[in-house]
Image (cartoon, rainbow, N blue to C red; front, side, top):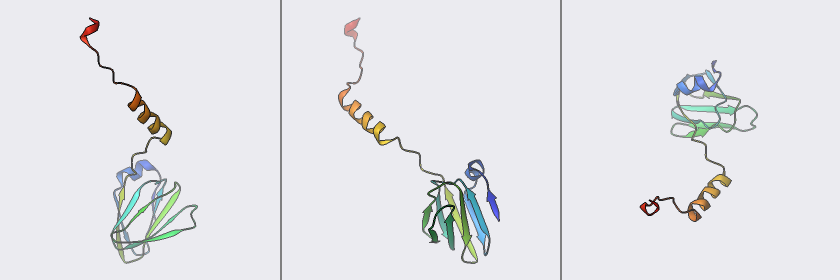
Length: 114
Protein backbone atom coordinates (compact mmCIF):
# COMPACT_ATOMS: atom_id res chain seq x y z
CA UNK A 1 0.00 0.00 0.00
CA UNK A 2 1.32 3.45 -0.91
CA UNK A 3 0.89 6.09 1.78
CA UNK A 4 1.10 9.85 1.46
CA UNK A 5 0.91 11.17 4.97
CA UNK A 6 0.53 14.91 4.59
CA UNK A 7 -0.25 17.70 2.18
CA UNK A 8 3.45 18.51 1.69
CA UNK A 9 4.05 15.06 0.20
CA UNK A 10 0.83 15.30 -1.80
CA UNK A 11 1.73 18.68 -3.32
CA UNK A 12 4.60 17.07 -5.17
CA UNK A 13 2.46 14.14 -6.27
CA UNK A 14 0.67 14.83 -9.54
CA UNK A 15 -0.42 11.35 -10.61
CA UNK A 16 -0.91 7.79 -9.42
CA UNK A 17 -0.25 4.70 -11.45
CA UNK A 18 -2.15 1.79 -9.94
CA UNK A 19 -1.90 -1.83 -10.98
CA UNK A 20 -4.40 -4.50 -10.02
CA UNK A 21 -5.03 -4.89 -6.28
CA UNK A 22 -2.82 -1.92 -5.34
CA UNK A 23 -4.25 0.75 -3.06
CA UNK A 24 -3.08 4.34 -2.72
CA UNK A 25 -3.84 6.14 0.54
CA UNK A 26 -4.08 9.93 0.44
CA UNK A 27 -4.21 11.81 3.75
CA UNK A 28 -5.94 15.16 4.24
CA UNK A 29 -6.56 15.73 0.53
CA UNK A 30 -9.82 17.70 0.89
CA UNK A 31 -10.54 19.82 -2.18
CA UNK A 32 -8.20 17.92 -4.47
CA UNK A 33 -9.66 16.64 -7.71
CA UNK A 34 -8.80 13.13 -8.86
CA UNK A 35 -9.10 12.75 -12.64
CA UNK A 36 -9.02 9.21 -14.01
CA UNK A 37 -6.96 9.28 -17.19
CA UNK A 38 -7.23 5.57 -17.95
CA UNK A 39 -8.79 2.51 -16.36
CA UNK A 40 -11.36 2.53 -13.59
CA UNK A 41 -10.91 3.17 -9.86
CA UNK A 42 -12.81 2.75 -6.63
CA UNK A 43 -12.56 5.67 -4.19
CA UNK A 44 -13.65 5.77 -0.57
CA UNK A 45 -13.23 8.50 2.03
CA UNK A 46 -12.82 8.06 5.77
CA UNK A 47 -16.09 8.76 7.58
CA UNK A 48 -18.20 8.66 4.40
CA UNK A 49 -20.87 6.06 3.76
CA UNK A 50 -20.61 6.55 0.00
CA UNK A 51 -17.96 5.04 -2.25
CA UNK A 52 -17.40 6.09 -5.84
CA UNK A 53 -16.45 4.18 -8.94
CA UNK A 54 -14.80 6.57 -11.35
CA UNK A 55 -14.11 5.67 -14.98
CA UNK A 56 -11.64 7.08 -17.50
CA UNK A 57 -12.47 10.69 -18.34
CA UNK A 58 -14.38 11.29 -15.09
CA UNK A 59 -13.33 13.24 -11.99
CA UNK A 60 -13.87 12.96 -8.25
CA UNK A 61 -13.38 15.78 -5.72
CA UNK A 62 -12.27 14.75 -2.24
CA UNK A 63 -14.84 16.25 0.13
CA UNK A 64 -13.19 15.81 3.53
CA UNK A 65 -9.88 15.42 5.28
CA UNK A 66 -8.75 12.09 6.64
CA UNK A 67 -7.81 9.01 4.66
CA UNK A 68 -8.93 8.64 1.05
CA UNK A 69 -8.32 5.24 -0.53
CA UNK A 70 -7.97 4.81 -4.29
CA UNK A 71 -7.86 1.33 -5.83
CA UNK A 72 -7.68 0.13 -9.44
CA UNK A 73 -10.62 -1.97 -10.59
CA UNK A 74 -9.02 -2.84 -13.90
CA UNK A 75 -5.48 -4.19 -14.39
CA UNK A 76 -4.04 -0.67 -14.71
CA UNK A 77 -5.31 2.81 -13.87
CA UNK A 78 -3.73 6.24 -14.14
CA UNK A 79 -5.12 9.01 -11.91
CA UNK A 80 -4.06 12.68 -12.08
CA UNK A 81 -4.21 14.69 -8.87
CA UNK A 82 -5.13 18.36 -9.24
CA UNK A 83 -4.62 20.92 -6.46
CA UNK A 84 -7.65 22.33 -4.66
CA UNK A 85 -9.25 25.49 -5.95
CA UNK A 86 -8.28 28.72 -4.21
CA UNK A 87 -10.54 29.36 -1.22
CA UNK A 88 -13.22 31.97 -1.73
CA UNK A 89 -13.76 34.81 0.70
CA UNK A 90 -16.84 34.41 2.89
CA UNK A 91 -20.07 35.76 1.42
CA UNK A 92 -20.29 38.52 4.04
CA UNK A 93 -16.87 39.89 3.09
CA UNK A 94 -17.67 39.79 -0.64
CA UNK A 95 -21.01 41.52 -0.03
CA UNK A 96 -19.39 44.27 2.09
CA UNK A 97 -16.70 44.84 -0.56
CA UNK A 98 -19.35 45.07 -3.27
CA UNK A 99 -21.40 47.68 -1.39
CA UNK A 100 -18.30 49.63 -0.43
CA UNK A 101 -17.29 49.79 -4.09
CA UNK A 102 -20.70 51.22 -5.00
CA UNK A 103 -20.83 53.95 -2.36
CA UNK A 104 -17.22 54.84 -1.62
CA UNK A 105 -15.83 57.15 -4.27
CA UNK A 106 -12.30 56.44 -5.37
CA UNK A 107 -9.72 58.77 -3.93
CA UNK A 108 -8.17 60.94 -6.64
CA UNK A 109 -5.73 63.59 -5.49
CA UNK A 110 -6.06 66.90 -7.30
CA UNK A 111 -3.75 69.86 -7.69
CA UNK A 112 -6.44 72.18 -6.34
CA UNK A 113 -5.23 71.66 -2.80
CA UNK A 114 -1.69 72.84 -3.61
